[in-house]
Image 1 (spheres, rainbow, N blue to C red):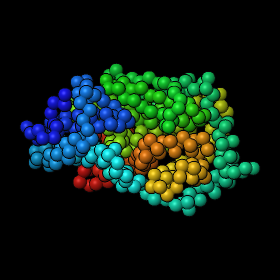
Image 2: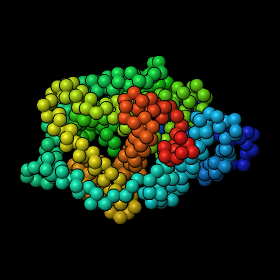
Image 3: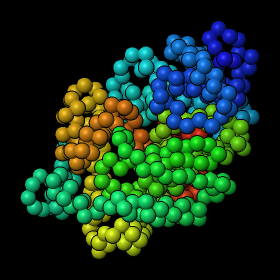
Image 4: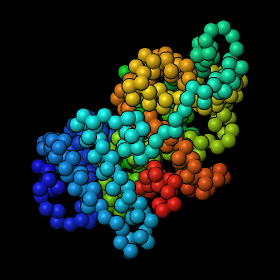
Length: 424
């Protein structure tokens, strides 16, 4: 049974550890109504069993979350000497508020894209119009001359950079090995950390890290669509080193095991934690491969491993650098679609025209919108916030940037705290 924290029961103590335990149990309870909500859990097995058997109604979860939110008090004078304790209070309070929003959504509330992203992820994506992408699209037109539409020319260009399926695992092994080696030069990883890789199909995402606790991860790579050469390092960094695998491992080591903060043994997907997780995972690619080091590694190692023409590596990344500038076009498609301004077909058309996605990739992305909704802001808004936070403190000097990056990975910082002087 759900042994403590049901509505109507008396809270015996307002200690943060007790509140944290109640929060974890609420996340697990909500996971009974939303199978995507609990992204990872490695706390006491009996707590999950309690949630599985109790199947607490949404209304009851909402009432308990409201009570719990009010009980996260301010830090005492003594506690304020520990920056992580201050951050913990703010983090837990905001995570509970996000959970309350998710309960409302599952109960039928419909929020606008921006309202939803702010309530769930503690951030709002900047708005862009078609005009904001015209200059970049014009530059791509110059780099990709020829017959057909721009997306047709881009797809034809990229066909020369697909990793053959027979070489995919070898290329990923090389990419993962390099990402891990670069990370180990700067990060003390927990002993015994490891992960395995699976190749899957029929998913709305291109890659996923399933953290399993004990410093272990399962990384899945979706092979529904062609896997281009740049995705090897992207996924190896983002899902592995120094991305999700390292992030979750450091939280487990420093906050769960060293400090006993049980709230970090559960990862609520639709919460502010995801913006930090996705933002650090995306920015971590730049941290691991500063300046031209990525181009050199891929040209000299991954292109030959994939059987691709390494002499075209610089050309490929010149085009990709422009396409990367269109990242926020995906947010606009999601915003308009989820706010009911356009339908699925129009959203896919927008993605093809302004985000340079193939029709198949655009269709896959609209399925992502359906399943994960405003979660898309976590990738680009998250990366930009993390980049701003770290580089405002450490600049772009590789060593100091790594130090600031690792500190962020191992701390309970909120997205709004990346800009708030009071939490910095």
